[in-house]
Length: 244
Image (cartoon, rainbow, N blue to C red; front, top):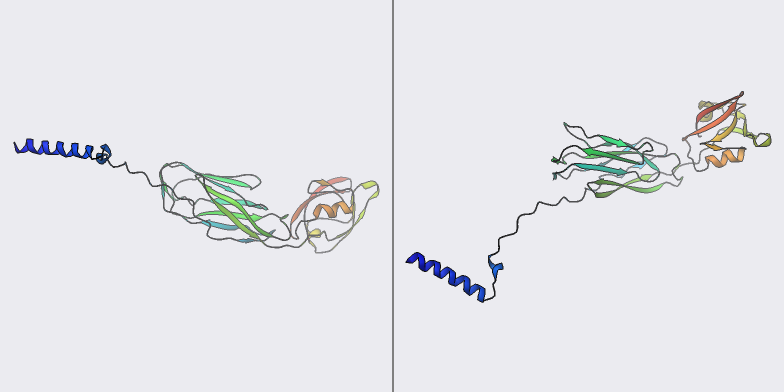
């Protein structure tokens, strides 16, 4: 009898709750726990200043310690006037293949595990291009992991307009620029430019006279190697000429 009275009391209490407007929600179960969301990629830890031309420098992104239960891809877009020389996902004990575009403008790395923790920093190495603006400046690309993106920012130092340390004169009929003299010990001399050469193209651009040669190297920094084509003793010769 005591048990029956208890059940009856419970039924009466439920009925009273419904009449009072509590409704079924008063007895709804708790929502299922949701997996924690993955927060955005951590910002870069350093902003390097690149010389153009100059060696590559490394940008670091710190680990966030989060477990990612899926296969992942790291994607990098180089800032303008730079190129990617290396990407190090810092995988420990397993292989994370890295692919860098031939022009260095983009790269990606794949993580061949569907259950991994980001516990080591990632590194991206960048070098400035020789035709970066002479004024230098700050430029940004992107660093993305699973669609979460952070800027990839570098500074490029100011530079000096490059020159060919040689005395050039026009050839007849727009045939190129004749080399009358090369400064001994200069970058031009060390690059193999010789008296008697006729410069016919700079960086793949045909040069019919000396003005065209000068226009072709405008904006290129001292110390940058520029491909040139010369006509020498009846043959075409290609050189990588470092500007002074």
